[in-house]
Image (tube, rainbow, N blue to C red; front, side, top):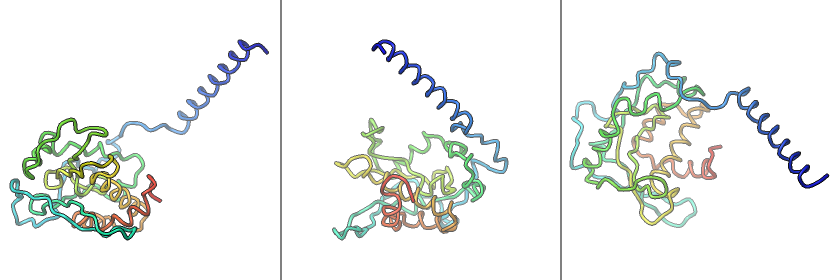
Length: 227
């Protein structure tokens, strides 16, 4: 077989493989956009605060607090930020039930930026006296406007559940605090999904102190996917 004939045959096989792969995606249902209408009882703006309902939400003079966490490798303590409970007590969306959160069709886009806008969320930078970061995307990202109780855990999209989580400087993206908290959120979501933890316990726990789950989350999810 000549080189040209071999090339044509190779291209033909590649085309067939691509067609078969596409057909497989269609047959098995490739990921699609969220069908939020499938959840008629979900109110994207619903909220129930976890803090003292009798206390007004403080929107200035907020201070990020510090938790010291013992490293699992025995190499001493590390410090991690937690929000000021006067300003960010956490809040849940009571219509985000366990059944909805476990439904493979649910996407957080059904609730994200519905109760508050991105501009309103950005106001929490001034609450915490944190300068709004520039070029805050990709590997340059230094801060995240974080849902204290994540949307995957039924958190509300309201300002009492939002805080600017920043730093630390001089580390790669995956080692920044908000990425470490993402890992905790994924771990807790998996625990709830698998019936190993009650949703309320996960919500209360992460709002009280997300760092308490760091060791367990690192062991379960440190490789990138929670097991």
